[in-house]
Length: 125
Image (cartoon, rainbow, N blue to C red):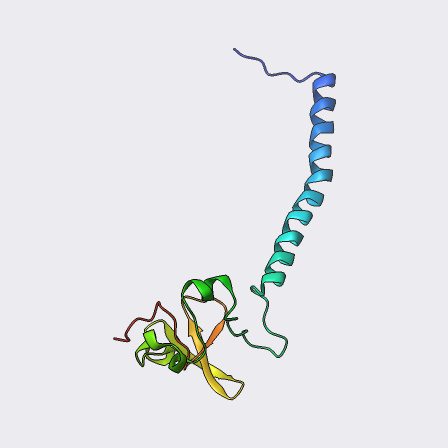
């Protein structure tokens, strides 16, 4: 039979280690989560716009540039008359700056104009 006895020295050693982890862990976790939140805020991430609602996609955003997002499809010859309102990724949501805007699965958490276009345009079924 195997005996698993903890002597006084082992008990206090384990207690001190556990206490150290309990004291240090919240500080480490807080710094990790606060830096993540600050990075999201800097990127314009999950936080809603000041006026309420979702923010519009910034055409200078890295994802927007990657898919050649443009706010007016008439300025993009490769759009060939296609625009977000006729795309399967688009869902009408609200009016922004007097224009129709909606959500797009390409730009999670942000709105795009109905008259915008990007290279990921996909015909609505």
